[in-house]
Image 1 (cartoon, rainbow over the protein chains, first blue to last red):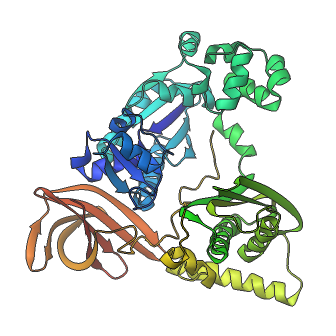
Image 2: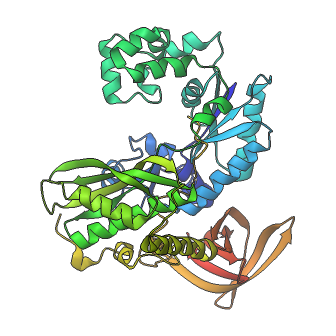
Length: 390
Length: 104
């Protein structure tokens, strides 16, 4: 069986554990400290009851509840807690995988007593961290994830062959991971309204109307193989990316370029950590004037150098119709990843490689950002003189 | 779905200066303090701290976490002293304690 352990309102619960005065109150965790100029990273269950949820602009959340409590996110505590929970789960002796920072999956194989184990895990998490988790148990990852949502918060749900159909018949298809708004619309048109409708459809039918996505739904819903088998294919990431929403829209080219440089360097650092090179650079820009700009370009040589990725992104940006639009959010992603087996031949390439290795060594020794490109300094604080009216 | 390559440290805010007092930590103090604590089974338990010549008896450690920064490991504690909450931290490379902020 697969256990899907999903932490309940993870960031908000940690903040409530840190500050017990926030318990029982509607609380949001914002991605930055500016209360009204940020996005809700996490909302407590009390805030969720008022219609507030992750991804909502904070000013909208405050409109719904002016007395809302606010805490700025500090990732170090969430990361540490996530790592500790991961280590704690490994002690049970089964394969454990990260699904995200606040979700874990455990493969108990044919061992009996999955529900008792889930109970122990839940108690152990609560007694150690004073936060709760919901656990779904099912024959595969997708159903286990779905099950984890059923008795949220602080609940356990076991999907067996006996109760599977009955449970799935009560769940709208949108509850299933991977079914977004547009997929749900297509499914509704096909007469698929509940998770059971989707579960009972033949693979051929789903492939005919939804293509690969449909076939994947069928395979994932009916799978019963272990996590270990799945993970072999997923050892190497398909892409690595970073994105950021600016505090306000700006058209200042220096500032926008500095952010692209920073995101390129963050991506490149992760490429180097995994000994990968990327051939395809993808730039995403969000502008109030032109909406989303998405463009990618494949280059001949793979790279793991942030400076090169930055220049590739600038070439992509030159394709934009508006030459200096206001930018609100931006993202850099590298795909087409290969094991980095390229050895530089040219003197300049060798010098560059040595420089990157030295920078990585310094940052590994003395902490992230001990040394970084001077251009990135601009992103540290958006100077008021650079601010443009939005 | 399981992500064997997932790394929770691949985070978005790591280049944002968290210790910048007027940015992410408006209540930031970062003041040196003297702390009475004991070690037990590789764990650290702060019991009392002195700040501005005043003793603060720690009644409860509500949460603790660590952050690695290069070779340094910083242990953070959110502590209750009566009705007030503080965040203190211990740097294992300088062996120094700091009062980071007043939480409540």
